[in-house]
Length: 329
Image (tube, rainbow, N blue to C red; front, side, top):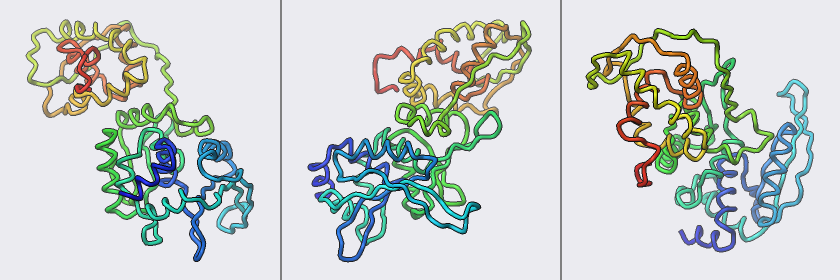
């Protein structure tokens, strides 16, 4: 802990957070026998802008020369060479402390005490832009993968717990020892969370929400599943009355801050927890205006039509958007 406190005494916490995200990702400390450590990271020529952005953010606090271009022969790739930009710092006291914290036995080891103090949303975004991948299929996306296979399984399980505690993000560990998020709601939440810190050159890793409203009939018959504990006498009339809350919900969800709070809210977790085996299906007709609003919210939150109706029910009971007590979020 003294090492961490010493590091925070010579570098602003904001910068230590960025270095934390970078060291979880593509950065490392260049260790040579008999020499002091140097902070090092590199990115392919395609990510030149990202390399320069990271350099610009921390150059005032670490002795970093400008990024250098490098072309390296590599028979493993089709072209026979790779092109990259790399940044290697000069020696400094901060690097000496980072070495003791991150490489206690000359092997990179996640310092969870440091992460508890310094990892924040921007650090998460830097880590994601270095090592994350948003897997798409046609016009949708399937999962977010963060390459953590260089860490031990035990370290990754601790990372999963840390991310759950800090950000209410519930990653899983896949068969390749990588952190993975499945399903649209948690993927959407993650991307909204990191959105302000995603560099323009990393747009391939962002949520490009397209909300075209498809042609709809004036009324559509569909099946809606609601918790069986709700006693409904006249399904079409009752459910359409619930859908009158849609304009209010849609209005509240136009703010990113509200979206982030909403994903963390108790009510939204109740929506996600609803399972078909605890529900009853109702065949109803929904008018076009409601269908259009449901389409918008479905794309935005990544939830089903039934979950949208359940959300309207919770909104009518007690709006999750208008609470004064922040601990409810």
